[in-house]
Image 1 (cartoon, rainbow, N blue to C red):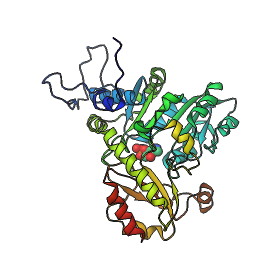
Image 2: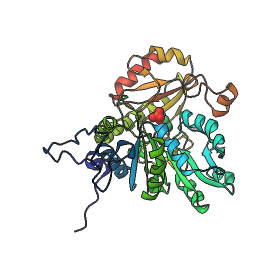
Image 3: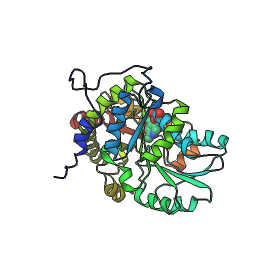
Image 4: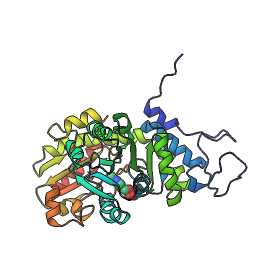
Length: 377
Ligand SMILES: *Cc1c(COP(=O)(O)O)cnc(C)c1O
């Protein structure tokens, strides 16, 4: 009989987790060793991304993103930049979506030219922009959807198709969606990147990054990654394996809460605009509906009054950078991710003093509504 494929929810609990073969314990033991017997086929060493706790997380993430293999890094930026440097070489050109995570944007602008790599930034909401930016020496296309902080949507199938016509590698930062809400490899994207510091960790207490792709791309990235030395340590991997077992439980609650809050905020008289891909009036709604399983846990909105005052009046929802934890957090992008932009650049990006970005947690939605309502009135 053909084996029934396991549901991703089941995979999040079981894939990659081998348990404890010595005592029959339910969880992967922590293996902090930095030295292993070399008389084996495969020499184990933490920086080679091949120790047991690393393999457990890589196995789970590969299963959840439907890739062949994965690598776990010490941060999202380590995963992102190692992948870029592994796939690009001097003389190459890359096309990036304009609305990038602040750290990625800064790294692209400040690092790539020093290595003889050129790039073009394009508005990701129109797939044809990627095609227009392709040059003879273009090697890769990099996207991020939903984007930070306005939750803009890039059409992944369309971008993947254009890139394939030109034999380019496509990369996506899938952090905001998490593997629960979007699986870009199924849509034709080649390399999926995550800041595991966010939903994958999910408890605001660890940093890591993940790359998932075909075996061929993982092997290429791994060669450079071993030189750059950005692997996640055993204890972090052990915690991430634990976090991933509840990824679906957490993210599904966060999705539901965010959808509820977006609808509620939309009708509040102190709110002038809500950005949430699940709302029918969101410009990317139709594409989001086609390519995402759910619309995610991030909601941004413009307040009519003073955004600072709203934040300071919240009691349950806490001001913080980062996102994706089970606790709801809020921040003002002009003071966090976009503080280094000039007023003109911010205006062009549509990010004002009135904008707040809410990372919806796993609390009871009514309690969040109550907190927001009190802070807004
Ligand atoms: C946080 C974040 C990153 C960077 O990840 P770190 O773990 O902070 O290095 C990259 N992309 C997105 C979308 C993020 O939110």
